[in-house]
Image 1 (tube, rainbow, N blue to C red):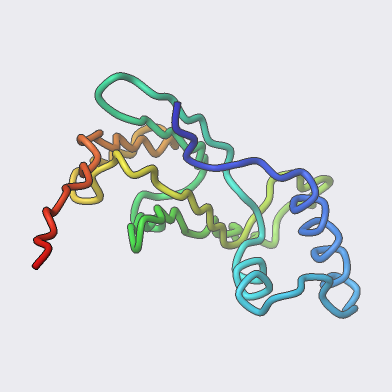
Image 2 (tube, helix red, strand yellow):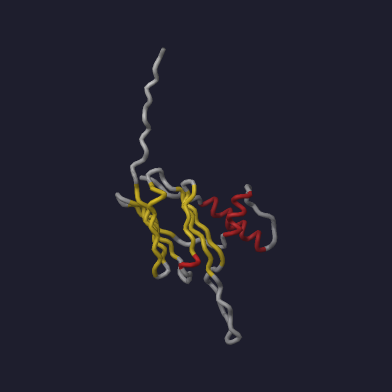
Length: 151
């Protein structure tokens, strides 16, 4: 069975610590620049379900309160990227907010695709705040042998 992404609890803890440090203006705990830049662009991460069938991988991402125009799905060098932003609604002069529990801002999730997924055959639909992706499987390229002539 192929995995699309691996869960790394240590990495999630480092991300949480880095977010805490950024909030108080402290230096980043992230080592390499790419990780720091990726994290700065991601204020939150949508929950996803990943399912495998004999024909495809299916990914469903929860994106409540986000318009489909605010979601971008790309594939580059075997990496599927979901990104977008949940905009905070402007407060009117009436009333007073007592609690804000929803997270706003940009998000980005990346998944390394297994070798048996066709990057050119990915379908995306968006309905009721759920982004659904179907990644069709293909037969992995078989290594071919080349006969070497000895002279």
